[in-house]
Structures are given as structure tokens and as C-alpha cells.
Image (tube, rainbow over all chains, first blue to last red; front, top):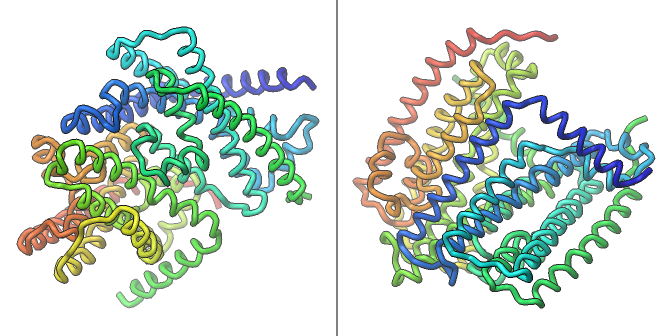
Length: 261
Length: 267
């Protein structure tokens, strides 16, 4: 079975299923707008007292916020719903139905859901980013744009592997749905560049929950703070995490005993 | 009345027992508990430093104190989510609860109160670590500690009443997320959850006086970290009592209307 055909099929199915509820688009739009307003109010409040935060200017921070919203939207479109479904499957014993299908289980559980309305956040994040870039009068060279895209992709891959690694723990611990709270809480830290946090927090945000790679590193690429070493490190770390998560997943599958008759 | 009391104790114990069944789950929850205030703490300490040491009367040390106490207060005022009513109404839970001789709200209050005991117990070591890491400035008097202890339960009840009230909107429509999100956004800005209220512009502080939010977050925190005079403490506790009674009134009024609209099918 061609893996890519499988992925596209599920994507289409997910979109069609979501499109049934068109009102959800407006609901999502409103929610995203409220969240954006709260974020902007926070930034305005901070900048009413100071003109830069750890070396980042007002519009640079707005750009970081834009990337944060954008990536968050992607996570809630594709990564989070699939991992939540997997957690529920493992807890309720319905994961067996995914295992009995003639396709790779990891691919299957990763693409089953596609919350198309969460793409509103991706669009909104981009809009905020563009606005901030315009205000900063940012001029982007080829290298900068390319490193931005690569950094964004690596960040997305790392978030995926993080979710997969943690969800795989469910094979042993069964109920880990508060992991969702954990991720949302820690991801919120990504609204600001990780450089402002004390060392131990920054290390955690880089290597434990890769928020730094998902948000700060792309922002650094845009604002000319990114060094080639960091970009290379991001690519290597992403590949490393892909391999580790795959191995851990397979270990988890071996551990899984099945729950239905 | 004695039956109600033993009901509360029973729910209390059940709640504690249930939470301890899944330790990994509880551990993740604890990390989440500290994530949000650390973000605010770091950002505002940074702002204070680049502003000559203080912002709105707070230094890096007092910000640390504010947000460490925040962690406990935040856990104390977690109440049944208004989003939970949709689940209750659609599945048979609510019908079952209405059949019992005790108002369903007692179940919510008792159940979540059991959780608070765990929250307080787990907060103590976490706070100790945070104190070591962030070095807060912090010396409350004994009566401030007493007032704080009363205030956190007051905050719990205030928030219970108001979140229940907005949750009841679910009886009329299930398109509630817009209303709820606005409510939470307002609460975030006007309660002292995002930043101490003294940092917000004065028009926000004036507006906040018409809402119960500041008594659920900012007031208990400020009671402990040593900002308030005894007169202000008593005023604050009195305000909490007012908002609790007002909330109870509203809930009782709306509850009658809400249940009339409710029909259920099933076994």
C-alpha cells in the first residue's frame, strides 16, 4: 500500500469530515481572535514599561508571537488530534482496530485526523508575522528565507516526535491524558523567545519539550540571529528524534498486549 | 445537615483516591501547574530589571513571591469547567444527578474540594523548590497567613458560583465557546492572573471593581505576600462573602429556569 496515497486519503477524509460543520469555522475564528487579542494586550502591557525584552524589540516579539500562533495552529490541526485519539484508543482498547490494518501503524495513527478549521490559526499566525515583518521593515535574503523554512520544518518534526514519544508512554502507563495539559502549559512559554528564561528553563524548552526549535529558532532565522551551527544542530536533532521515536514506538507495540477479544 | 456533611467527607475521600490511581498523569499535571506562572514571572522580572528594578511597585523579588503564591491560588480556584455541562447534559449524568436528593452543585463543590487537599500538599515542596530557584521577597505576618487561608477557600467558592452560572447557559445553547472564551479572557486580564492588578491601566482596575474576578486571584495572593493592611484584608474577605452570596443567588435563580428546559431520554 503506497504510504503517500494513504496519507492523502486520510487527509481528504479528515477535511471532508470537518467541512460538515461549517459553523465551527466561525467559532474557531472568534476563539483565535480572542486569544490573539489577549496576546497583543500582554505585549502592549510589557512594552508600556520597557522598550526591549532581553534584546528583542516590540515587533520582533510580535513576530515570535506570530510564529507561535502559526505553529500552534499546525499542532492542533494535525499532531494533537491524532495523538489524543491514540491515547483514547490505548485507554479504551480500540487501538487493536488500527493494528489490524495492512498499513504501518505509526503512519496510520499520525494522519487519521485533520482538524481543518484549526488552520485558521496558521493563517492568522502568518498574518501577524507579515505585519510584524512589515513594521520592522524586514528584508529577507534567499538564505534567510530558506533557513526560516527549514527551521520551521525541523521544529514541526520535533514537536511531532515529542508528542509521539510521550504518547507511546501510554503503552505502559495507560492514562496520560494530562500530558495534553502539560504540553499546552509548556508550549505557552514559546510565546517569548527562550533566551529570556533562566538556563535550566531554557534547556528544558530546548531538549525536553522542543519549543525553542519550534518557535524561537525560526524567529532567529528571520531576525538575523541564527547561526549556521544552530540550524545544522536543528536538522541533526530532528533526524535523531525521528529515529528514536520510531524505535520507542516499536518497543511500545511489542509491549502492547491488545485489549479486545 | 449532618447527612450533607458526611456526603462532603465521602466525596472528598473518593476524589483524593481517584487522583492517586494514575501517578504519571498527576506528575504531568504538576509540571503544567508551574509552567504558566514561571512564564509570567520571568517576563515581568525582566521588565522590572530593564526598568530600573521596579514595575508598578513590584521588584523581581516581589514578582517571584507573587507568582509562587499564584501557583497555590490557581490550584485552589480550579472549579468545574463550564464546558463540562455539555457533556453532562448530553450523557445521562445530569438526569442521574437530578434524581438524587442533594443539589448537584454540592457534588461539584465537594469533589473539587477533595482535590484541593492534594493541591495544597503538592504545592509545598514545589513552592520550596521555586523559592530556592527564584529567591522571592516575602515576609507575611500571622494574621495575613490566616486571612490568606480563609481567602483561598473564599476564592474557590466565588469562582464556583460564577463558572456554574455561565455553565448553565449550556441549557439554552451548545454554541457556548464564544461566551466562555470572552469570560476567561476578561478574567485573565481583570483578576490578577496575568499580572498584578496594579500593573494594569487604571481604567481596567476601575472596570474590575464591577466583576468578582479580582477576589478569586489577586486578592488572596496579595493577602499573603504582605501588601495589604488589616483593614484591606477585612474589606477583601467581606467582598468575597458578598460575591459568594450574590453568586449563590444567581445560580439558584438560573437553576430553576435551566432545569425546566431540561428533558432527558435513556434508562
